[in-house]
Structure formats: structure tokens, C-alpha cells
Length: 361
View 1 (cartoon, one colour):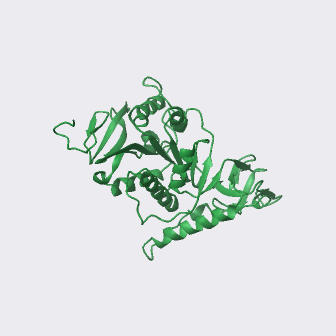
View 2: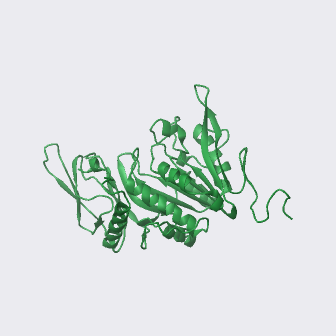
View 3: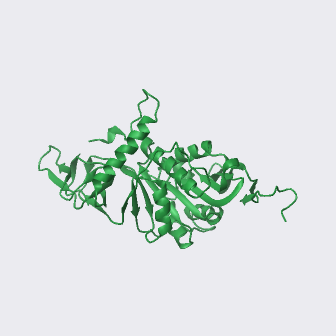
């Protein structure tokens, strides 16, 4: 029999850290992680939306690398759009997991460790280990699904894509619901959040889109709509007819890096989202006077899912990341349709570049 002070049909309150959130309510709070030189506390900021109806617990996290910013406006849009009174289940939003790196425009923590190589962490370990432990104990361990939002590393750009562990039909189902242009089944890395969640039986989607230290409209819009589609697929929110229509994402279980054949200045002819066939010219790398240009060709049929943005390269630098896809032109057409749909939804006369033009060489 339910407690007298709990209406019939409502789920139980959600307890996390020192907070208790009633059904149909939200709470924003911080969990202390460490004390800084100034004596102020550095904390993990969370917002919990506890639905008025029963359902799964899901977390959405961003900036586990402190210079990867696109996930922050995605989470802001979720927080501003979703109403816990209409939500089934519980949503934990973590817009800046690595708040230390965020404050310093850095991928890393002050101890120079990569937080996404520090899981499961330790309550008495390094700063990175302590933060990883806090996130595991209070967020990952409480959820049945995670969506982690990333960008490419500094001086690189990634086409919006979902990365999942291989061999999971359920993850494929969720990735298809997300609706990014490309799904890549990629290996799990030791110490990563995704590897830890996989070992614990918690499925995770990893969204890669855009570049470090910059906002990218295309990446943010596809990411926001993708998370909403997953929540709708899980029955946590009502399906929204306003979401951009998506086709079937391309799937790849193999990708290759194409590296600079010499040091010099790059003239790039392809970029993320471009379809390529084996033998297509991707770029040329020449000397300071443009002498002795060396062509760089695609070794496979596929779609460019990442590219370097710096024109000055060293021999062996990774310049292009290509996912092996049988019909890359189909993906290109789908990206164009998504781009057109986003442009149509914008106010007339408001210029919204989908890719940063100053990276074009």
C-alpha cells in the first residue's frame, strides 16, 4: 500500500547525493569534488528532472573534456524544453563534467590527466580519479542509459556521428533512433566512461560532433533533436512532430585515418561530410613555396567523418578520418537534407553558418 502522503500512481521521490526530488519536480545542485587554492569548492553541477510518471533513469553529460563545448547548449536546450510534470522516468543533466578543464579552456584537468581515461576512479586517488569516482557513484550507477556528448579534439572537426560498442542490437536500435548521419561501431578504450559503463551493463551512446572550443549550429541542432528522439523512443517524452525528419543513418564498423605524406602546407579539397571513393583526391601537401606537392588520396569508399583544420602539418599527422560505407553518396544526400531542414527552421534573414568558414583552406 502506498504511503499516505504519496498520491497513488506517482513514482517514489528520487534521492541523489544529499538531495531528494519529488515526482514532477526538478532540482539543480552541486556535488563537491575538491577544494581549490582559493579555498572555494569545485563541484559537479547537476540538474535532475524527476518525472511524474514511472520510467527509466537516463543521464546526458557534456564537457568530460573541458574544451568540448557543443554539448553544453544541447543540455541547456533540454533543460529549458523538458517539463518534469510531463516526463516518464528521471533525467540527470551534467553540462560540465570536467568543470576544471572548462574554466581553463583545456581538455584536461589541472593534474594533466584525461578524465575520460580515469574511470572507474577512486575516492582517494588523483583529482581525475576522484572526479571520475563521484560521477560513477552519483550518476552512472543510478542510470540504465547514458548519452555522452563530445566534439573532436582541438584543431579537428567531426561530422555529427554516434559511436557505440559493437555487438549490441539494443545500442544499434537507440543509435538509429538518435538519427545522426553516421553510426560507427568503435572499440572501447581502457579507462573511458563508455568502457566502464559497458562493463557494468549500462548501455551508452557517444555523440561526436564539431570541434573544440567552438559552437557549431549543425552539431547542436542534430544533437538536441537526437537526444529528444531517444527519450521519445524510450517512452520518456511524447514524440514531437516538429523534430526534423530523418532517414536511415549509415552504419560503419571500420574506419581509417589518412595521414600527411610529408610536412608542409595543406591544400584540402575534402572535408567532413563529403563522400569519397577509393582514389579520390583528398588534399595536396606542398612545401613553403608550393613546391613538390604530394597528392593525398582516399584508400577506401566512404564518408569523411573527421578532418584536421590546421593547414600546417607534419609528416604523419592524421588529416582525414574516413568511415567505410558502401554508398557514401546516399549519406551526402541525407546530410544535405538535414542541413536544408535546419536552415528552413531558422528565422528569415538570420545568417547561421553550419560550418565555420575560417577553417576552410
